[in-house]
Length: 113
Image (cartoon, rainbow, N blue to C red; front, side):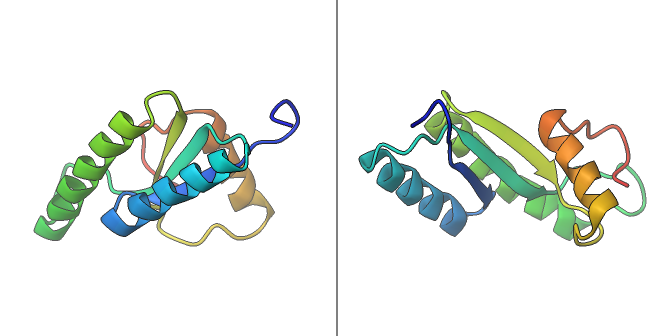
């Protein structure tokens, strides 16, 4: 019952993850399971300074390509973009902070805590 339950897909902005997410969305649709939410996790945002490196720039370019594809494929979905964090999300306070980012979009101009 989509009024009571939905499936939230979580992926990263890479080829295999996007491919598997699309397969999952199609399979869930086949079983009439509601899925209109996707979380794109571990996104790199520019650091603007000496810590920004060539590898990070290259990864952002790859991620941008797949984010464009996600936007095209899932234009009717609610897509949440989550930043790559410096540590695992474990424990009450980190989970609460992460949850807040799910509800309020991440602002790349603010530092990741």
